[in-house]
Length: 223
Image 1 (cartoon, one colour):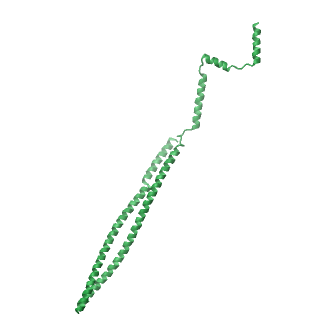
Image 2 (cartoon, rainbow, N blue to C red; image 1 turned 30 degrees about the vertical axis):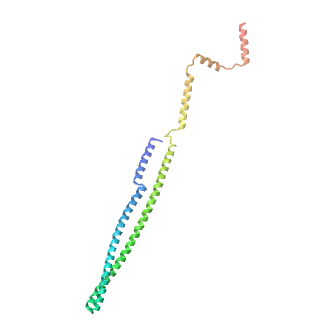
Image 3 (tube, rainbow, N blue to C red; image 1 turned 135 degrees about the vertical axis):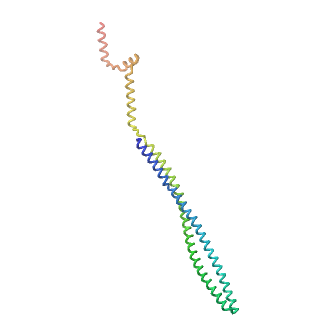
């Protein structure tokens, strides 16, 4: 692998890590869960305040009902006393209170429906947060496995990287060095014994007929 290619890979790896740092799916999911949990807490507080307000309205209704009962009792007493004017006045007050009670019942019913809707939304939000937490755990496990797998693949891929080395070229260079060494060995000066041994070993084999003829000629020359 060339220097520029390695440099490109290093820069690319650093860029990817920088992007991963800002686009970590687990981190993004945690941020989303955190926001929704804050919304859930705020919603529960608001719902609790709303319920407390409606409870106060119920107390007002109970007080009106109690006052209505007193006006009805006072009306009966006025009738017994034949105090028509008082009886009419008490009845008028009772009717006004009954109208207020009716209006209060409508308000309570309307608020109770709203509270139930809020409770349903809170429940849905709780379920959503629970699912997100489960998904976060699942994604975290998958991400860990993916990172380990990538590291293994990168390591195995590095086994095939010979850093630009050509094995065939290396083989040729070694063979060339060996040939050069052998040539130097052949050219090295030999001592006397080595030369004699070389002369003897490299002498051609003489045919027996030639040897006999050579011996005959030598004997004739001696005569």
